[in-house]
Length: 277
Image (cartoon, rainbow, N blue to C red; front, side, top):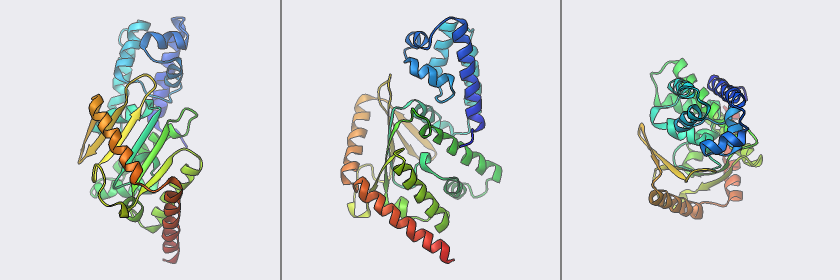
């Protein structure tokens, strides 16, 4: 996958970090111990594969005595982010997660969307937007998917409601490609996918998406989203309840094998329909 502009800019941040770390004669492990993350995370930051949060940028300045350089650079890059303000914090945490569990009741999760599908759902929500706006949103969504491409990708578990599979967003050809992409990701062991079937009836968190994230050096977090708003939940009791709801969704969903069979059947139906028109 080609690098996006944001990724290149975060690689600049990482190169800056490496230069200042080496000038201070710190190993990655030394610096990590001083800012309370592992040496592995320092390597990922330096390679531009992960984005540090603001408090880490501030710690880099403190330890490396860089007079606010990393905080200023961080704020400049964040202000240029293509993500909606309410999603920015969740996008940053995706970069740091070691495990992501997601339930999608209405659309394919962003980390699994194809360009054509992302374009269709973006256009549906923004019918009067310019092509430039739509393409920027599509590009940023695809750029997020780089976390599934590197060797340190998180464990990724997705449950989608059957409606996600059955609603022909973008038309038959777009849906066929989208479902085939999900199948390919599952077969490459980048994601474990389950489908919550219509037959399951009522289910926990009716109609609400949920994303659970676990980290190497921080407590787990939950993220939920409503209309043009998002909630990042870190209260341990609330996260525990969210995890319990996800466990119930897992129990009600089809097995991974049956889920892939359903997705494959739907993809074939969409492909036949697309080819017949």
